[in-house]
Length: 324
Image (cartoon, rainbow, N blue to C red; front, side, top):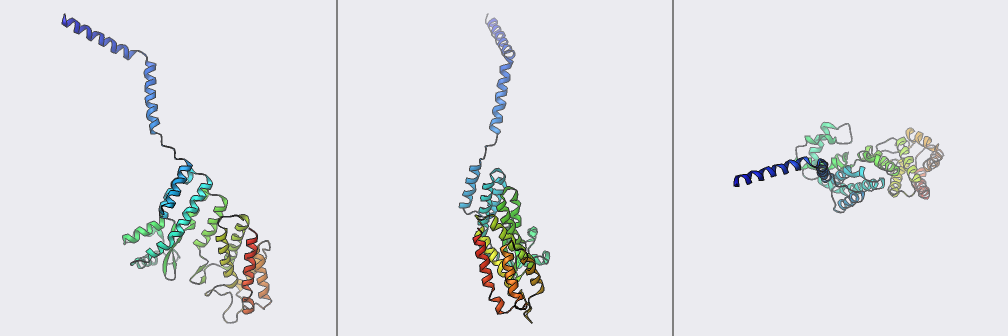
């Protein structure tokens, strides 16, 4: 009797298992679907909103992180935000780069860093003003190698001036963000890249042609006129002032006249004549006025001419400020 009861229980259990396996396949499929969707749902990445990205960026700025950290964050997130946010990122990065120039300059003059840098420059870059930053792996000093890495990935480069290498912002590298920026910021970076790629003055000598100086003057003037409320206009006005002084008076090692007879250099006078034809610009107008002063003085650059430079310069700056 006991054996029959056990057998009966086993039979009933088997019938129930078969019934459960066969019944309601739709419900089982739905349960399976819910399970799969549940897994997928938990695997979806958490959305990183524009507001959260910009908050994190501002927090990084406040925490005084080095430029390299800002570049890394910017590279990862600039495509996810609006154009105005991208501009804020790049201007924030530039401000940090400017703040760190002095710190990095001090570091690069510690210990024997300069001697190793000069050795590397002589081996690879004697025809250039700039150290080839791709040669970092050749540096033997680990401390210097780490510093050069910070400079390279923080978008700096090293320029040869007065027999030593100094860090400056690599604005050409900064232009890599152009597709995310507004036209005003792109124009600003373009102007700054001209100077960082080919400085106007090196070791008290004008490093570019007078025609190039004139082109830069007009480029800066056009920017200020086009964006009268531009956030960088004060800085660009100072740059314009620097270019104009060089253009009108030359420099200690690049005078605009021959030392022997004080006659204006042909290259300079020809540049003035070309620029003076651009009468739709303040630069052209002032250059024409200065050219006439020189010509009326038989092309001799003496005190009579040099005394007029400040007047011409100040008039140009006043007109450009008034155009804003």
